[in-house]
Image 1: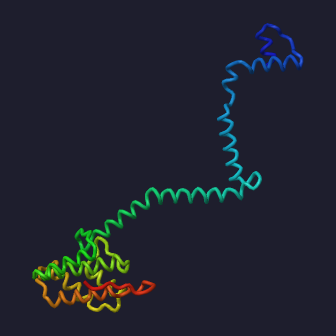
Image 2 (image 1 turned 180 degrees about the vertical axis):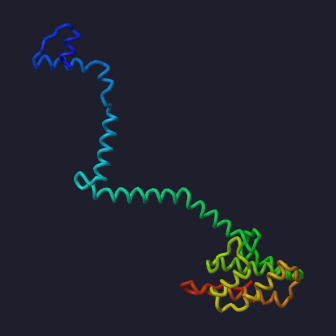
Image 3 (image 1 turned 90 degrees about the vertical axis):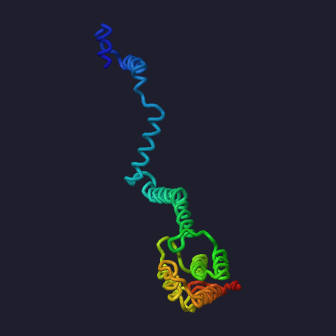
Length: 223
């Protein structure tokens, strides 16, 4: 390269070592060479890449032992972020949807509200409505106590079967489901005896502890 520089200058001589070093530094100081030099960002990026390569290759001081820790931290951070950003809202939406659905109808009333509606219907002689509302009150009570989940698509028979397991002392759940289906879907008028049976069943479930529950029995005074 030095010989070429001298040839361009028209001086075809061989420089000594010091002169050659000076000429080389002068050449490298030209703008086109300076523009080609790596920037600080390039050097930093290369250093980071080299570090990651050393981790995967097991090189460096303890790099191989650090890699699993980094991977675990990254995975945990990703899962936590996904849970906070996406998981919880979906769970909340599902819980709200389940709480507002009773046997194919949207119903966000509390068990006490449904129970009062049943009592009011019975007082005015509307036995069919009283039966429907009382069975809904039973289902909402079991759901609120986390004894039986009630979600869109749950049928009266399905609820009765699972409620019988959660409240083994509460007899008549199968009959209650049949009465509800007959009145709700088949247009049957319902009988006062059926309503009385549902009231008794409701009071019994409210005073019972689910079979899977722990702790003291929590009771409510029948209304």
